[in-house]
Picture 1 (cartoon, rainbow, N blue to C red):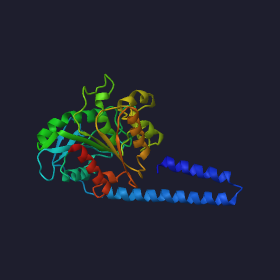
Picture 2: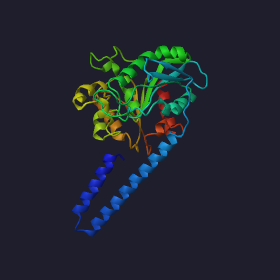
Picture 3: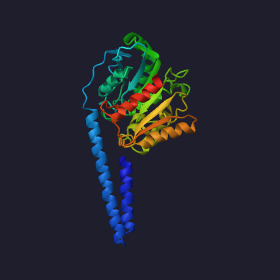
Picture 4: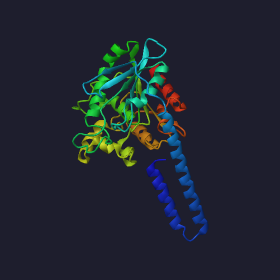
Length: 329
């Protein structure tokens, strides 16, 4: 349950209590409902804490190679070779999450990258610039994103990737490339697959669709209107877009729910118990795609939160690998 949903449930319970102030039976029912709601929230928070502990319990896994796609220290891609040594392995490009904020880098998804390599994929894990420190985005490293640097980097990394793969992972088959990303990285994966539908004049626009087998977005921040309404990641979308007066101009350039249809096979994997990026955000994106005449697959995982999708110890991570395999092979 999201914080906004919890607040709404609490408010509804309070209203019911006032309305039934003259009836002890109704008052008792309201009290029981309120206790039940608090218990449910407590259980959800407990489950989330256990999921986070599990996901971040794995040691970082060093890549087999790394390569720069630019001059900035964050303009790097880590490569993981398929552990079975196969030739012609399909490529999974991983874009990490962390609300586009500086403290969260690709290290936390290195166990996930290794997990995919053990499944026979060649993996490219992309780093990109995050955080604050530029005009119009006042604040410290907790500020989400760097405009336009974050998008400059993802576009540059994707453009450089075929050449870097040929050099660093010659066993990889770049003709079978699938994009994936988690949370804010899921947003970036959807955006990278939609660059050919960007408005004319955008420096990130591609003249033709990228050569991808598809996208598997994991609990993505995929619909900016829904994410802002639910205050996902404590206002991260608004911070990413910068000053309020810039939102109207910038959002159509980077909101996946606007950049539709793409013509690229897309699946969203979403936990129904996700407290960080609620299910409603994924559903809003899928609905937007349908209105644009495109079908986006939605795989809902019951009672699964935000982090099991990238936790090699979780069953949800195996589901993610299967979704990737369906597109790659």
